Length: 231
Image (tube, rainbow, N blue to C red; front, side, top):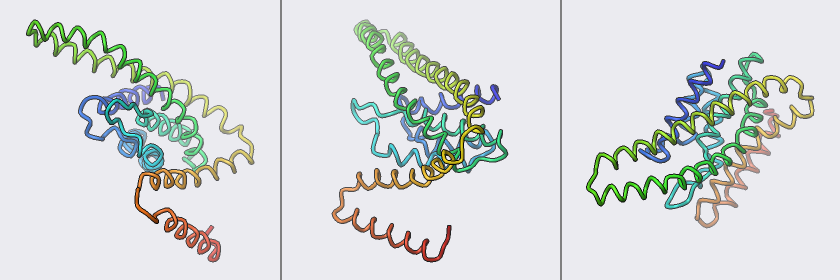
């Protein structure tokens, strides 16, 4: 298991570089989580987790000086916890996915603070690069850019490894001990999360009348499901 955790941490660190370097949007949860799921032979769970996390923070993009919550970190952690837990219990369930997301979300917010500290620590490197520019020392400027990327990569990999090494065994240990009411609560959370994500998406759409239409469609579907007893 720890070999896979190391691999996930390394791959997660590579994806996180996209947030500060290439910025081709491959660091979004909808991409990261399914890839992590494929590494663990459970791409479906990764896709579900990625879609939910993508909806949560779809309006939180790194534009200008704004540093959003680290959704890439949350995607790696949630997928790792859910899939490892599912492999230990004979299959990944909605309750496990809900639990994994709830466990991962706070660490995505904490990672935002780590990003800020890394950026602040780069001020010294930037000042040195300016001096190198005055000296027309291009090679030194290149080295400082590479050093910033390497530093961010290793901090991210270490953060992912430590969290997975703690959270995955912890989840495997306490999940079987959860009572039936808590499992029922996690089941409800699983079906509530997409609604919460949809609310976030609607909040980003500045079109008049969208929310009432969405609510009407939601009520119609709910009544239809109740009438036909789908669940």
